[in-house]
Length: 360
Image (cartoon, rainbow, N blue to C red; front, side):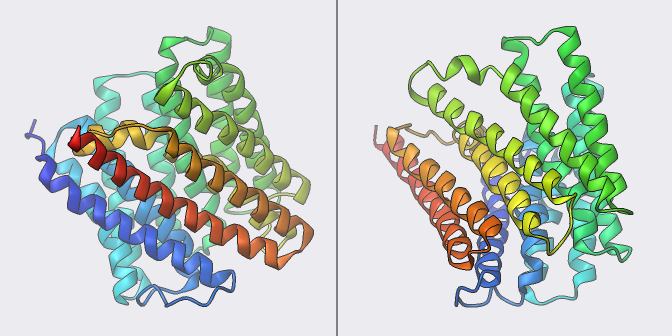
């Protein structure tokens, strides 16, 4: 197997992902009515592709490449990051989408290699997650609108997190019955995402029901229920996970009550952002303090100050979801602005933690 890239090559790849994050947040705030400079040549319609494919696709692919330890696997975050950069530079949507699809395909290939190395349920779920990203991106290139592929892209993020949490459950292994239930939930979630391509109401309802079942499974089985009693970083991670699982369930309930994934409906924005901010970003906050040191070889000094961006994040989701459901545009806009502030504060806190660890 080819040798891994050095840590110095990983930083530029992470920077590509962060550019997509900054542009995606900017596009999202413009969508909410905030008067901000345009994110390069990208438009408000690029908010979803920038966030899911450009940012999360790059970061998840980078983490997977480090785990595999093969140079070719780093082409996945490179392609995903360049896809986001292509949107910012004003290229036509096709080259950007093709680069993101290439990143998804390479991530799937890297995850397949990991599955061959360690055949287990959690690596299989990670493989399914990567394939969901690739399928969604392929459908986008084929002409399907973003709302039709959002369930597949969301499945990519949700199943990646679920697979990683299942891997960590080896410290408190679920029973055979619980593992079978997990496998059934994953199958239903994937079936709902695929069915949503043709029918956003029926497929979206199945997708939401599976998300609700997954939230219940994670709340019941995750080791975070016990580690919340610990101290320091261990407790902080659990404090990110448990509210995140609650938002996963709330988002699923909102989508179910709304009749599925129906763009323009009152629950569509509320349900999706409960999932993508309340659940996914909360998971990012919890895992970043573990993943970034492993990926970049940096030491971070944990401190209670990390609770500040976490609390701000959950307040932002509360305002966003409440504003959506109440039809209050001001609350909705304020929720979006607070999400951006929470992300910025978290990044600054990470940088301060790195500097503090370096001094120590």
